[in-house]
Every structure is written in C-alpha cells, then in structure tokens.
Length: 419
Ligand SMILES: Cc1cc2nc3c(=O)[nH]c(=O)nc-3n(C[C@H](O)[C@H](O)[C@H](O)COP(=O)(O)OP(=O)(O)OC[C@H]3O[C@@H](n4cnc5c(N)ncnc54)[C@H](O)[C@@H]3O)c2cc1C
Figure 1 (tube, rainbow, N blue to C red):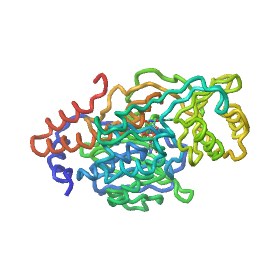
Figure 2: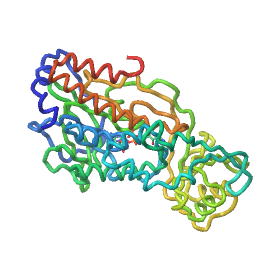
Figure 3: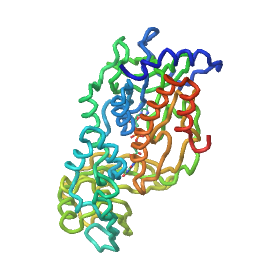
Figure 4: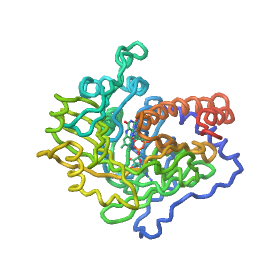
C-alpha cells in the first residue's frame, strides 16, 4: 500500500481546515467545440498527477513508483519526441540512473565509444582547417574515484525510450486512446492529452485535460492530491497558476536541424572524432552535435536573426545547402529528418510551489538553461530525484507528525529562488 494512502485521511482533514478560496486557472479553449466530456464526480483521487512525459516526468514516475507513491502522467503529444536534444549525462545523473534497475549500465553499453566524443573541435569547415580542439574529459570523469559511474553521451530520445521501458517493467501502461468514460488509474501514461486548466478545491486539485479522438474533442477531469508541472520550458501549469519567470529572456533564436549522414559520420570518426564542432565560415556558422558518429546521426544548431530572417526560411533544401557549406562539400546520403525552432533563455521561476504547495514545478518548467554546459536535462533529473524523496519525507511527516511539519518540509525543500 502506498505512503499516500496511509496519509489520505489526515491530508483531507488538513485540506478541509484551509480557509482560502481558490479560483480556477484555465485557458480559454472556447474556440474549439467540445463534443464530449468525461466528468468524474466520483473519480478516485490520484496521489500524484504529472503533466508532461519528458525526461523529468518519466524519471519522476519511476522514482515515485519505487518509493511506493502512486502516480500517473498526461502528455500532450501523441508520441515521444524523436528530436535528439540533450546528450551529455554527468556523473550525478548517472548515479541516479544507477538506482533504476541497471539503467546506468544500459546507457554505458549503448552509448558510442568514449574516444569518439571526448573532444570539442573548432574549425572553418568539417573538412577544412581546425582552429583548435579541446579534450573536455578528465580522468576523474571515468576513473570511478569521485563517482562509481562515468559520464555518458546518449541522446535524450534514446534515454526516454529506456525510461519508458523501465516504466513498462514496473507496471506502467502507455495509452494512446482516450479514457472512454473511465478514470485515469495509477501507472498510466496518457498520450495526446493536454492539460488546459487546474482548479484547486478543498480536497484535491481538479485537472482538466483535452484530447481529440476520432475528430471529437474530449474533455476529462482528473482529480489529484499533488500536481507536478513537468511540462517543459513553455509550461502550461506554470502559466495557469501565474508563476513568473525571472532572468534573461530571448538570448538567441536558433534552428535545430536533425539529420542523418553515414558518409559524414564515417569521415569524422576516422579524421576528427568529437562531440561538438563549432564551425565558423563566411557562408554559414553553426554548432554540430555528433549524437552518434557510427550511425551518422547529427543535430546542427544555427542562430537566426528576425526580422531579417524567419524560421520559415529554413526549409529542408536551405538547411541541406547550409550543412554542405559547413561540411565543405555535398553529402550524397544526407537525410534531413526534422527542423525545429527554439529560443535560448536563462530564466528561473520566481517560486516552484503554488496552491498551498500542492502544485509543484519541475524541470524546464521551473528553470530554462542555455545549452552550454548541458545542464537542462541534468538539473531536471536531480530535481526529479529530489522531489521523489521530498514527497516521501513530506508525506511521512504528514503521517507521523502532522500537516504543519509536512508543509514545512515541502516548502523548505522546494522553495524557488526568492520565496
Ligand atoms: C537543442 C537542445 C539541446 C540540448 N542539449 C542538452 C544537453 O546536452 N544536456 C542537457 O542536460 N540538456 C540539454 N538540453 C535541455 C533539455 O533538452 C531539457 O532541459 C529537457 O528536455 C527538459 O526536460 P523536461 O522533462 O523538463 O521538459 P521537456 O523535455 O520539454 O518535456 C515536457 C513534456 O511536456 C509536454 N507538455 C507540454 N505542455 C503540456 C500540456 N499542457 N499538457 C500535457 N503535456 C504537456 C511536452 O509535450 C513534453 O513532452 C537541450 C535542449 C535543446 C533544445
């Protein structure tokens, strides 16, 4: 039986004595006709609902389940993103993964050999002159002296795939269909469901999701005790509860091009193996991330400058031409898989908790990092790990020493930068 079940009676008492009247936080979705609504007046209250099945939502689901805390996930997309974003995994993340049934070992087995990704290379083109190269790995990264696990280089979408495999192994089901008039159960990941409003009541948080099934717009109500907004940099949950971000916004607009070329992979593997290539020439500039040289899988990051340039200018053909300029010649086997815009910010939420500590922001929803240093996903994973224990300690406190201590633990552990 989960920790939360033990505590629910006292939790209810705690919530009932609150005097604050909450309002409903929602987006205006009235432009879309709602054809069906799944109301859930008698729905069981989920201990923890996570919005967002990115790395932080997935890691948190595994950790909470292992701690005996029941949870489920709603995810806006119909499928997991295949766009390789984060790729560098540091020691601390690997230590957390070590707790997850061989995940660290599986990453180490599946990643490219370290000799292929330890360098950053600065050049005028991939086949042209090298301005300089830096070996960013230190022996302590691999020697298992400061940590029992080494750093790793493994694409975020591959990590997400391993995490979903882990979740399935501990009883999670990934569902693409709607709820069809049933309630969301623990250990479910509901794909294609967007969180559109949150309404705190005296006893629970009522979360509304919207989805489209066979052309019908379906609205579901999911009651939960705690809601975790792990819904990324543009977080709906954060916006709904009105938490502001502080820091530097719109530092740089970038285009991220996911492409495959075994020809380029083979060339770099033998001539100048590295993880990041900073390429500067009069025709184009960009940072190439070699996700997997053996497979020839790359991401190219190119800055762009509105209003002179706009994202729509970066068609597949334009991107190929820019890649050829950066490579120094044409590639016969290039396959542009995906082109996405993104904006670099350095911002942190003014606080991570809302609605009397029952709504928690996690991951990019709480802090948006520039990619240099590869902190985005890593901080998300630490955060997911911490939240798991904080829930456990908080809920145990609730059970053993009462709501005020529980509230204190949550508050002191998850306070935002200035709260
Ligand atoms: C180009 C690039 C390179 C990067 N490289 C690195 C790196 O090397 N190392 C590193 O550590 N980090 C890196 N990052 C950052 C890293 O990708 C992010 O920090 C990480 O994805 C954040 O994880 P998350 O789970 O918080 O959010 P996300 O991965 O954004 O996941 C959020 C999920 O929530 C879903 N969602 C959003 N809104 C809703 C809603 N209303 N209802 C339901 N679901 C919703 C989204 O569909 C998404 O699946 C990089 C980022 C980019 C863009």
